[in-house]
Amino acid sequence: MPNIDRIDAFADELSAIRRDLHAHPEIGFEEVRTSGIVAEKLAQWGIEVHRGLGGTGVVGVLKGKGNGTRRVGLRADMDALPMDENTNLKWRSTIPGRFHGCGHDGHTTILLGTARYLAETRNFDGTVHFIFQPAEEGLGGARAMIKDGLFEKFPCDEIYGLHNAPDLNHGELAILPGPAMAGADFFDITINGYGAHGAMPERSKDPIVIAMALVQALQSIVSRNVIPTEAAVVSITQIHAGSAYNVIPGDAKLAGTMRAFSDEVRALMRERMRAICAGMAAAFQVEIDVDIRDIFRVLVNQEEHSRVVAEAAQAVVGPANVKTRAQPKMGSEDFADMLQAVPGAYFWLGHDGSVPVHNPAFTLDDKILPVGASIFARIIETRLAAGHHA
Ligand code: NI
Image (cartoon, rainbow, N blue to C red; front, top):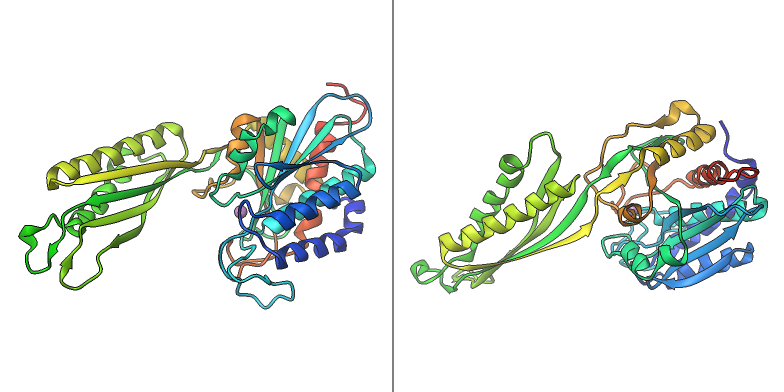
């Protein structure tokens, strides 16, 4: 089953765009060069361009043949990660501490390829909104665009997004209808104890001993409070306290992440975290501050739009390569916010790279570019079929 020929014909140009973006990575809300290239390409292909949504976000508007009023959104993320790249590729990052370690350079290029093909052929009836968002990596780029009026200025009846998946093979696609990626909170906990000489613990309210008890107690949220058939995780990922061998410090800080697949479970986990901290504070006669922040919503794919993705993908990569009941992922995705506002679906597309995302040696195989662009294009040509009026 084929990529779209016309897209295959400019696949080399897509690789060149992708490698240029890769060599010049920019992190969240700093995608000035990247968004400039996106805007320039879209304009060059005759697509109406709007810049500056949510900071560096870009929206391209393309109308098809006919008078159709339906509107479909396609979204890509543009940001890199604040980390060093450790590969020997010719197009490796030229900027220290900046790396497209999650393949968003590929996502941006795939959407550019889709835009070019659709602009050249316009074999659809309705409007496509190409949404290039900043700051997917935990900084809230989707929220920033939505807050800037994304869906008021560019209304969408449905919306689609994708992520590359090095754990799948080239040409394989996976999607999961329903909750597919976890909602995530980040939290900071500060234990305000009382410092003293290390030889005189009776004079202290030792925040380190309290922190150890608290870390253990917080693990009971998943094991004793959440229904065992629900997936949930509490990870304490940071502990900070102390500066000397003989000083009991005055305070200790814990930080980490909590994740689950439903808003009810997330609410329960927050409530238990606050209650356990309050109980520890009372037991040890200290104050404990808890700051829990909702960073990612649960990503929920609609049944209908998951089917649309599966059918479009089957036409491109063949039915045997499309998994329609993928494993849910405990990881999170900013696109969840857009899917809360507009129904749609998000899918994972395999490639020949095998190093996991966010690893310094991650590589994206460019052969994914025409595959992704072909699937996005087929979605548009199906959902905004020329000659139909919805
Ligand atoms: Ni990513």
